[in-house]
Length: 57
Length: 210
Image (cartoon, rainbow over all chains, first blue to last red; front, side, top):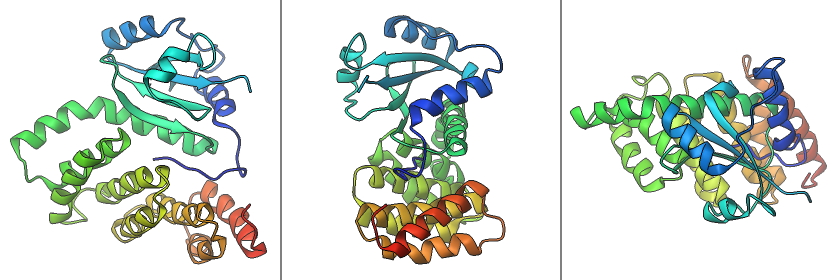
């Protein structure tokens, strides 16, 4: 389910960081370095990759 | 929560460009949930309030966990409307709208109360799909069905705020007013939706888009 209530709320990217700090506690998120290694890890652990696509602009 | 996922940041202009292109990601920020086979199982695009965001994470992780068992149940009993409703929601979240609609047809044949609100969530997920595609006039009647089938205040408030959101997107904010007022009248609507509804109602009454 997706919510699109533009301009009433914060950007998802910021919230992603927020969610990370909330749910991972004091630990920082262990970002995977490359997409291929993320795929391999997702396969072996039967988890989903959470791929945060961003741009600098 | 994030322990349930393999997190990666991809700069769509730099090292992540090829992956962004492969998955046709054109709007930013976008978060895709991709399984080990490289298939997309969920997407969070654009802007979302914190509670909705964590709810999304829970829904997507749960769908990933339960999908194999649900598929097996459906195979064993193809007429199981409650399972069909769950699957309809999952397929819609994955963008597989044809399968979602097929499952919805089966789900609608059953007792709407039997699936613990799964039918309403399926309607919401399918309507979300159309909303995201910009097909607001298609999304709104499906959200309306979700309100009727809804068993939890969360699902009902979600459908109402979504209808309002569609009206804003259509540049017809005044049409959002009844849905927003309905949320404010709900005794048990989640605070997040109440806050959003208040803000949107003010904007709608001013007549401006935002």
